[in-house]
Amino acid sequence: MGYTFPHQTGDNEGRRHTYLEYLIQDGNLDHIMMFSIFSLPDDYHRRDYIMRLAVALKVKLHFANEEFVLDSWEMLDKIEYLRNFTNDWSNPVYESSNMALPTTE
Image (cartoon, rainbow, N blue to C red; front, side, top):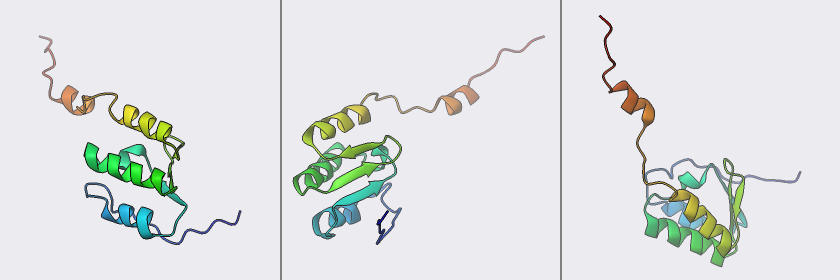
């Protein structure tokens, strides 16, 4: 299909995503593939900055899990809405394992 993948990294999670920022700003790329919208920074201001930078510089961010492409201000709003759909980040598996089950006697 003529695609070339010059670089691959998985070191963004839990960091400030400085390499992603570099790739958008100075990487001479038109497209960047990411695993998910949840691979973006958790910090709202940092995430917003990176997404706005990508749209402004016309670098399309592709998100494989959601099959989204960040290529417009409208998609930026949609991604932000989905990221903030819930504030409940609890793990139901962990919580159910800590619940006391009734004993049968």
